[in-house]
Image 1 (tube, rainbow, N blue to C red):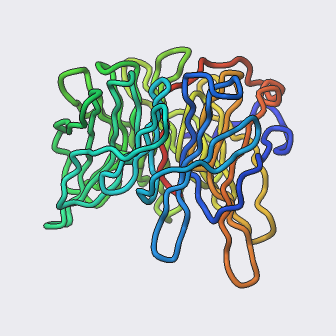
Image 2 (image 1 turned 135 degrees about the vertical axis):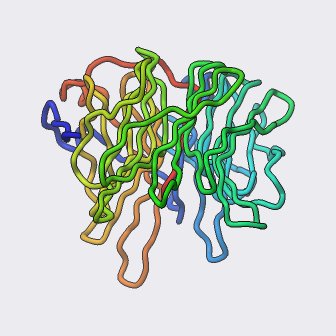
Length: 376
């Protein structure tokens, strides 16, 4: 695919503003919003992730109060890897079947049918109402080395596992989205004949079916996330392609009703981790944040703030489309220190007015359900 060209120029400082967060040694992995009205008169926005400790990971949650982020109490289930919002209810999932549910009085743990003899992660979530929440990911049984994809569904009372096609011995799912429980897309990756290929599954209410994806000679594909475009109902998937030298470049695909096709994407090295609405985020080679906007048939890179100092690094893991046409992106800022590296939660706010100046006009409806993240 030919790299896309930006329709206009703009400065990162006008397009993105970094919001102040608590000074934690933490990584933010996703950002979500309730459909209800919070105490400040606007929908509540949450960012979740994990604190890095000497012994592992500890769950962390931040809640946005106006333009200020404050730490909020949350049970510790370790690393958060996926979230979704079903109306006023929130869900967050992590490793080895651990799930949190927030409704009314705060966060609490929820039980899932994750196999006890397995290890793995939930990597994507979506919802079609408080009684219809979906989680996808991968797991590996301790008795062998085979990794497989997993889909589980909440019906308002309990989680249950759905039967998936037999893809192979080593594959997984990393993102899920849809318009209803009879039109669900799940994306991920598989190693087939020692080559990494994209996996796209569709659920019609009864069965899962694998759909073919475009191939490029000498290039491997992996999909990290999928979202539904609010204006057209089409599905878009993002991830990365890997060339023969092992270098990653953004991978973008679109479903328009008759098949999946590659769409134009920025030519710079890097990968896209998450997508919501028409904004996708990730990281670039050279330790820079990466963001792109879907215009008319192609993705265009959006300039992001530079890391602090020559050894600083920025990574974006999750994104939330806002009703005014802007977006919030979350991740981690790695600060260069003389003897060690310090992590700081990273939140960037994308200005809708600056987007319009670049030629990206309009806004989209409030996105209530799908948030997904892979990568760190």
